[in-house]
Length: 352
Image (cartoon, rainbow, N blue to C red; front, side, top):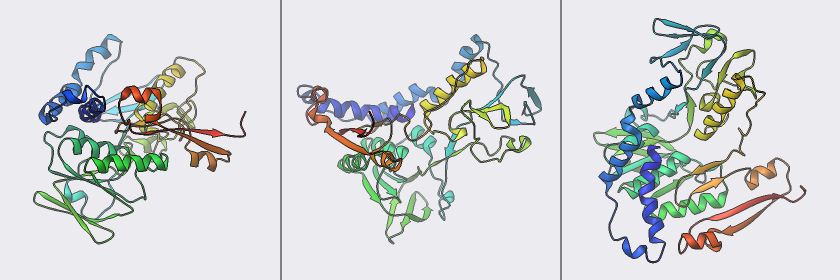
């Protein structure tokens, strides 16, 4: 929610500027403080107390504190031990993975939490990683006035998606003033007062006021007492199609904690399926691989469902791609002149 709140105002302006008639009415710039205030309103200042009544109205008892497994069907919260008659569900999500780059931890890096809740926009922002968080926040902060540099060790941005999408997104970000550097690694990081300096693998150095680490996720399972039931802390909690841990049918994991698909809507989907399972229905969870539907909320957006052309071919399909520019469709024309993007359909030519 906070990331989308930061992205939406500039998206709305760009959309209007592509439509003749509306474009002439857009004469001002983004009000940065108003954007941040709206973001705070949407997330309620990270205060979840407003949801407690909703839980209680549905018979849910909320226990606040750090919960840890304490053996079979037991969860300890401080001095209190809760006993589950039927099931324990782990839904602790994931946190940012901090690469072991010399000096990075000491440089007080931002993660997705700090970058989406910042109270002021830095003049210069360095971003380690060109995945979903990296590209979304590079666009958001560039539109809010930061000089943004993205450092990606791979050869292209959003490597999970189609190469043409990576290139079109790179062009869009560069057009917004983002300095995109691919194929280079951060070798060292140093904070000297207000400045952060990153030395790159090619010997160059780039400087910023803040540095965002967007180089992957790790499950929040390090301190959950997993060892008390024979599982390894810090690792994803692997589950079967019924979202249960093999050999521990009372223990379930959903969302990022299971490592199956690190997408918010997939976690919600798994929660829905698990509710059916615990209610006695013969449900199973699927769609946890590279074919899961997904969206990156940049401009142009990158939306996909199913396999990329390369992934389909790696699975042995005789796949072919059919591409159509977004501006070449009737729907794209309604959205404005020069609507960016490309639509692709990947077809298995030998499948009836």
